[in-house]
Image (cartoon, rainbow, N blue to C red; front, side, top):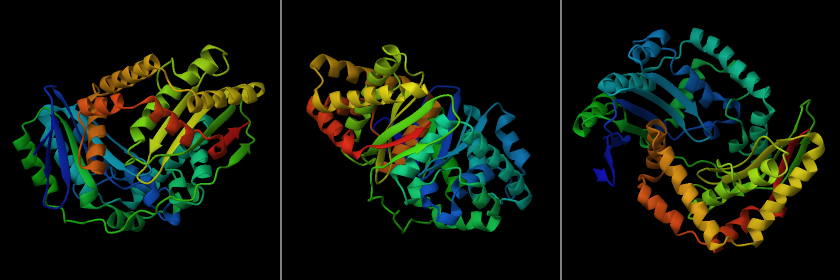
Amino acid sequence: MVENDFLTYTLPNGIRFIHKPTCSPVSHLGILINTGSRDEEQEEHGLAHFIEHSVFKGTTKRKAFHILSRIEDVGGELNAYTTKEETTLYSTFLSEFYERTAELLSDILFNSIYPEKELKREKEVVLEEINSYKDSPSDLIFDEFEELVFDGHPIARNILGNPAYLQAFSRTDILRFIQKNYHTDQMVISSVGKIDFATLVKLMDKYFGWAEPKYRQKDRQKFESYVPGNRLVKRDTFQSHCLMGNIAFNIMHPRRIVMVLLNNIMGGQAMNSRLNMALRERKGMAYNIESGYTAYSDTGLFNVYFGTEHENLEKATDLVLKEFKLLREKKLGTMQLSKAKKQMKGQIAIAAENNEDFMLSIGKSYLLFNAVDTMQTVFGKIESITPSDLIEVANEVLDPSSLSCLVYQ
C-alpha cells in the first residue's frame, strides 16, 4: 500500500512495516516494539532495559560474537535502545546487505536464548551504566524529577532499574516478560533505503511472517493522579541543578503540536530560545539551559533544566518564572510567531535529512498512529497555530500553582 510518500504492508501475524525508498547506498532497518519500562511490574524494574542489552548475547544458531560480527564485518552498525514505552532494535548498513540485516534482526528478536553465563556478565555492564549515570547529576535529575511528578505510578520508575532487582533477574524472568509484553500487533518494522518494495515484502514475509500471531489484550495503567511537589536534595556538586515543570499533553492530544512549538520557543535547540537568551546570553548565569517536552500514550511532561552557581539559584529561577509569565500573559506578535514557525519547520526539515533518525521517527509514528504525516502536512499543522492557541496552552502547562520543582544543591 502507498500512503503519501511511504510504502506499507501488514503481515498475516499483525506485524506492520513501513518503507521510505531512497537512492542512498546506505540503508536503515529497525524493529520498534510498543513495550518499555512502564510495562514492568515493581519486581521487574529494569527488566525491559536488561532485555535490550541481553538480546545480543546469543541465539539458537549464533553466539554473541557472531551476532555483532554479522553486520560489523560488512561495515554496518547494530544498536538498540529502551524508553518508557518502546524497545527498539535497529541497524545501519550498505543497501546490498538488506537480507543479511533482516535475517539477523529476526534471529535476535525471535530466537535469542539469553544464556545465564552471558546474563551474569551483562549484569555487570548494566551496573556500570547505572553507576555512570549516578555520577552525572545533570542526567540523574531528570529521572528523579519523573519519580517526583509521576509518584507511585509505573511510569515514574527510571529505565535502567536498580542493582537489587537487576542481580535477581534470570533467564526465566526474561522469557516471561517477553511472552507477556511482546505482541505482534504492537511491532513495526521501519525501513529507509535502496531496495525494491516487492523484494522487501518478500524479505519481511520470509523472516518475520512465520512468527506466531499474538495480540495485546490489556491496556496500560493510566496516570491520573498528578500532585505538584517540591524537593531539595543535598549533593556535593559545584553547581545547583534545577528542574521544574508540569504534566502536559499525551501523544494523541490535538494540542500536542502547539505544545511542541511552545517548548521550542521557550528552550528548544536554538541558541535564541527565550531561556537561553534570558539566562545565558544576557546574564551569564548558566552554561546549560533547556526545556523539554515528552509525550507518552496517556500523559506528557514539560520541564526546564538549568545548572548555575549556588548563589545564583534564586535569581535564575525567577528569570525562568518570568519567561513563563510572559508566555502566559502576552500574545506573540505576527512577526514573532512567523519566525518561531519558520524556525521549527527548518529544524524538522534538517532532522529529516538524517535517514537513521528519520527511519526511527516514521517507525514510531506508524507504531502509534498507524500513519505518518508528510512534511507538508506537519508544516500545515504548524502554520495553523494561532497566538491564542499558544497562550491557552501556556496558561494550562505553565501555571505556577501546577509546577513541580527538584533542586540538587
